[in-house]
Length: 218
Image (cartoon, rainbow, N blue to C red; front, side):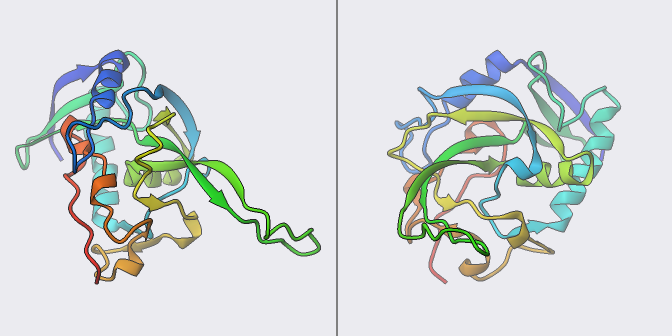
C-alpha cells in the first residue's frame, strides 16, 4: 500500500467532528453533541465488539497500513492529542479517508448474571451496567491484539440515551475470522431491533468507515 498524508488533524479538531456526527436516519440528531469525549488508552479485552466476525482482508489492510504510515512516523494504534487523526489518500486506489482512532462508546445495558460454580444465584436481579463498546474500528482493535494488545481510542461517555447503539456488545470468544461478510443476520450481530436504521451513527460523515445501510431480515 502506498499512501499520501493530506492532512494532520488535532484532537481538538477531531472532537468537534465527532460531536457533529449525525444519525444516519435523521441528519438533525447528533448523538455525541453533549457527550464527554477523550483520547484514552485501552487494552483490547477492555472493550467489546458488536459483531461476530472479522474479515481477514480488512485485517490485512491494517497490517499494510501500519507499514505505510510508519514511513511518516505515525501508527494507527498510537495517535496522539497533537495528531489524533489523519486524512489519507491511498495512491493505489485514489480513495481518500480519515484515519481516526477506534471509537469506543460507553453503552448502558441491563443484564442478568449467570452464576459460576458455587456462586450465589442473582439471575433474577437485573443490573444496569456500562460496557465499553467498539462503535467504529473493530479491525484496528483486532490488529492491536496481534501486537501488544493496547491502543489509543476515542472514548465517548454520555451519548444521547434516546439513541443507543443498534447492536448489543458480545465477547471476543464469539468473534470468527471470515473471508467475507456472513450472509445470515444471525451470524452478524446481536441487533437490538428488527429495524435499526434510525439508530445508526453516520461515521461516514467524518470520512471514516462506510455509510451504514438498512438491516433487513434474512
